[in-house]
Length: 233
Image 1 (cartoon, rainbow, N blue to C red):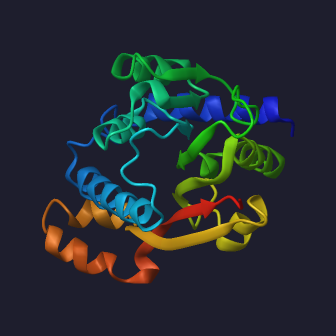
Image 2 (image 1 turned 45 degrees about the horizontal axis):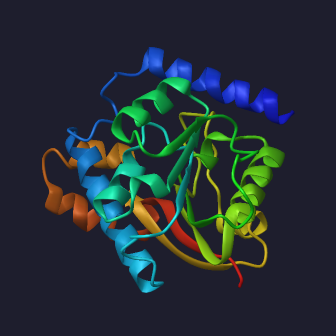
Image 3 (image 1 turned 135 degrees about the vertical axis):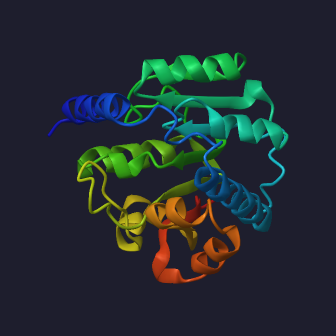
């Protein structure tokens, strides 16, 4: 499978989801979505802080698979300059929504296997749930290699994605620790399991956030990895 055909498959999958799923399925006004978003945002700031990358003021940041720009907007809330932000996504509709939120950022529609950025030009490259939508191994490796190329020596990659597959959706595939290490050879990894399994969160959070918080403490019920991948100086 070539990169172009895999990109086309992913676009078709996004279009299918847009047709078949409720338009507000991932909106933050849904209790479970907001519950998990707040948790991940807190864990991201803690992880970046441990490595001296928070607050992000003055840092150049690239979001791979930026969607509608929600995470880039979060970095602005944390102190990043909009002019220092870059985002890329396969969906032109999502990129246009991101531009409405972040008119000063550099936002592109395109395939993240080839990034329109100079070598060593960003301090932090991010990806939130982009890699699990890519089933082709060579495209995943190309994306990872591009992220490493554009990050300066001593910079880092922020990773948040499924660690296990979704049994009811064969269009996504989890990335385990061994694959994560293969994608970013020679890098330092600071990894933690996060996020209560979404079906459980959607069932429990509207009734009891306390119970959901307790369940999230069980490692087996955490379905994602949050990682900071340090590029060697």
